[in-house]
Image 1 (cartoon, rainbow, N blue to C red):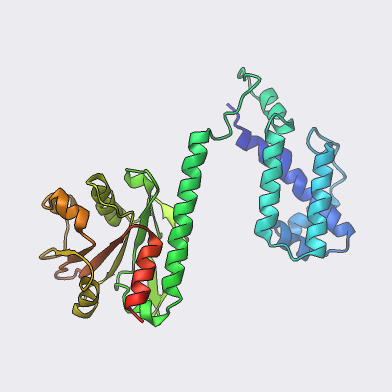
Image 2: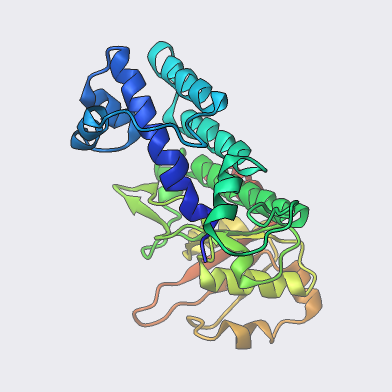
Length: 303
């Protein structure tokens, strides 16, 4: 069984890198510069330039392929286009080659499966596209809210637990742990200031995700939650405006604890104060309808 994902590197990306390397060299770029643009080593670029010109293929013979190479070279030479923008252009062109194009034709010939004329299995359905966009929006909102907190410097740094801060958010209309995004490695504290060590991803922050999903299933309007240090000063600042509940000690069985709350309580809870214990840090969990609501509340209360 051959997947079109296996076809793309050999039939499109590698020929594109070779052609672009040769075009940039013709325009005066040195090999190390070409390597930086292509994301390969200088010896690889050298091999591209030494290889005899490859015979035209169903991909490289297309006017659209040649136009893409020239367009990319022109952008690289005349404009400091971010590599991310170049990647977007290439991915969009690849999609065109796959949509009833030459890559699709190569894929059909390499496998014995009887594809229908209108085959679109390598493209998401409208429903999947909507889910993808929702998940993308969730991670973007989460990162932007975290960045707002990070930019306050030591103000936010004082709120970060010793074990690091987890900040999670639920995608719209989602109800499972797999649909909660968080920060791998948490948001940590270095020299008194918060630092994001990795962009948010789905299926991270299991404990907070567990609480958030339970709340959502019982009618809570909250889609986001952040973990903070549990000190008297911080708690007093939060509970002056928030409905809160406490656990007597560090919670090791959230499922059992959550079941002790009535549905009415769950719909009202905005802060959970976890008691901590021997060797276990006391933590506050602050809920919000979205990440930005949490960030705006914290920046307004802690200055």
